[in-house]
Image 1 (tube, helix red, strand yellow):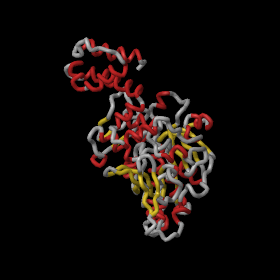
Image 2: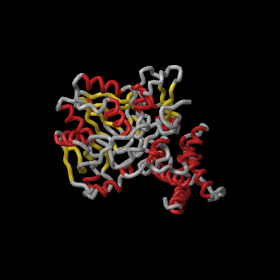
Image 3: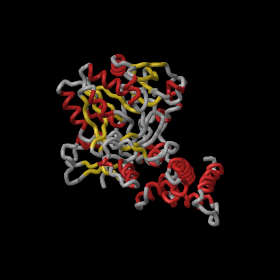
Image 4: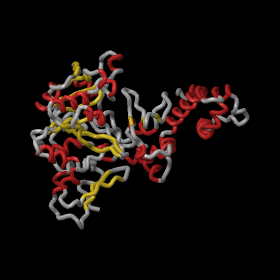
Length: 416
């Protein structure tokens, strides 16, 4: 197997696919890592893919020249956004000023890039997407539109922004926003999670990964976990278990940035809590193009201490650290294990706490009380008893008070 860059380091930016004149590159997703593989029968040894790959040349990264925290002045934009709505506000202003926006959208089960030519179309880009997207083919389209005289605002992860700038030779009409990225899982991870619920990604019309500070996966308006629990997909995302291999050695996890502007959450903000609850974004500006984007947009900007912002966004200092459970987690998934069982095996204490919280929450709402609860969740309940080694065989499990007492005992014993 001949790869464009060192095995396991491929970011999945897909620039090599767009630049290959013979279609000889295929990016293979093994779930644990991406690799850009060269078809030697098609290859003409032009070396274009190797030259394009960001792992094979020095990155052009620039440190911020100014920084703020803030939100969209339009309260509707702010309310609909995952954070402060700065991306949407900047995108809309860019279109009002005659430009076209290119960013990631979800459609027909795929996370791919598309263009927005009207302010209304910007809505399809709304929301954080905690999964790897596929920008394959988009760089060619961006370059074609730039050559036609259009102004393009490209919004993506740092590796995707770097690829767009490299492919277009940082065209004077190309404006870029990179998003602070903590790491991304393969879409196959999301599919594995959905398999637990007999749901296919292609059947989902709307998907959300968070609302403000609440990180919960939601499909077609329905969440996968009770309000007191984070679902297993986002749990493994937030603790850095599910990322592809390259993310743990990310070259963009530093203060030097790929885009004209960098956007993320203003974690560690010292603004009032009621302001933070509405969503506050962090914005770093690296260029005159970035300043222009900010000046023409309707934003509310506040001062922020850069040192504090860096301390609370570790991706501005270093890549995510690989958990020791990651190898076992992927091993279980590759064996065909259900997603929840892989989580249970690798994170038993966390799984225990979440199961107890779920059962206690459902006990309040399940018609028929604890007896019906046990009928529906007998496996989970017995697993709790087994893992805590608390023998209750001589008791009547169907007694409402005792079931709830047992669960509350476990909650107190394990500080759940």
